[in-house]
Amino acid sequence: MEYIIRPIREAEIPQLKDFLYNAIFIPEGIAAPPMEIVEDESLQIYIRNFGQEPDDRCLVAVAQNRVVGAIWARIMNDYGHIADDTPSIAISLYKEYRNQGIGTALLQQMLSLLKADGYKSVSLSVQKANYAMKMYQKAGFQVISDDTDEAIMKCTL
Image 1 (cartoon, rainbow, N blue to C red):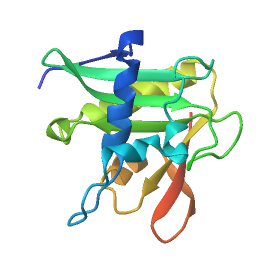
Image 2 (cartoon, rainbow, N blue to C red):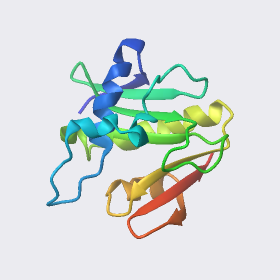
Image 3 (spheres, one colour):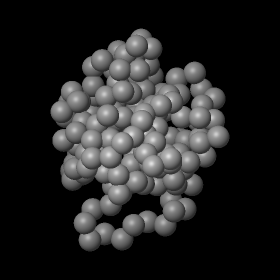
């Protein structure tokens, strides 16, 4: 599949709500939560007023003339927060575009962008059962804290 990765355009920022919903890991056999879950304050922190903070960064993958994936970073007190100078990232692809290397390409380009912008590290939170955990480990992320279901991972840039 052919795709390009580029910075998000201002008019596309509202789509982050949909990507945030699609970033929620749903284990096999579990019903997906209603879309309204993204209105919860613990999730709104990822997208509210995105693009208005100096540390906000977002790249999108475009295929077949539509945005099919996004990775965004911001400094926030989210599930993956480790330090006030370390951005946390979220990544999401529509299901039909997963397992084609697009997520890995988005992740690699975001890590390069953050490094070029002078950040020393980046963090994220991931459920241990999420297949994306292997992608993060291959990209250099290491588990720095975990509990029964989730892990906080850090990548030094």
